Amino acid sequence: MLSEKMLGALNEQLNKELFSAYFYLGIAAYFKDRSLDGFASWMEAQAEEELGHALRIYDYIFNRGGRVELERIEKPKQTFESPLKAFEAVYLHEVGVTQSIFKLVDLAREENDHATYNFLQWFVEEQVEEEASTKAIVDKLKIIGDSPQGLFMLDRELGARSAQLRALLTQET
Ligand code: FEO
Image (tube, rainbow, N blue to C red; front, side, top):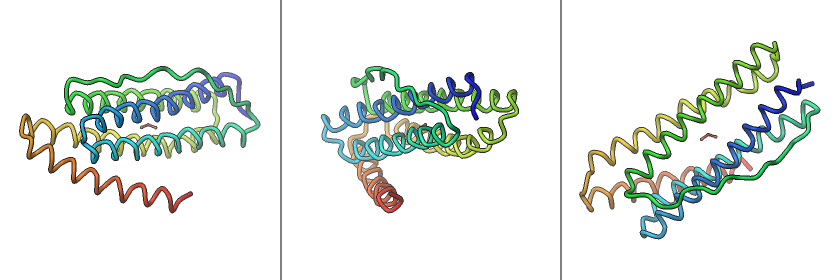
């Protein structure tokens, strides 16, 4: 059974993961408006992944006999100065999510909640990957600078990669 404090914190994280899905979808729409379909598709795949993260927590709460409390989801930002600014926002968002997962891990440890501590380890690893992949794209966009050719090439690369990721996600479900 989950403590009230742990349950509240997990429900908060559930809301953050749902917001993350919304956040990525908002940025996907920003890219789609600019006909950068590869970038958009990468963001859409990311939104699906975030929904998967939310569902993991949703299932876990039920499995531990807790009550899921869905809260209002904040409106995401949909305008950015440039693709680089959009990806910088994504990277910072993921850094924030990592901090939030770490706080949950700290709480699970304080409460000697071994099951939640174990459950959260998947998220700890996932965050390392999410930070690394978004940082890599920020770095590439910095190199590209104002080059339309560079942007076009990266758009193609991200489009191909997200098509693979979506195929994997479909296989998993
Ligand atoms: Fe679910 Fe990207 O953190």
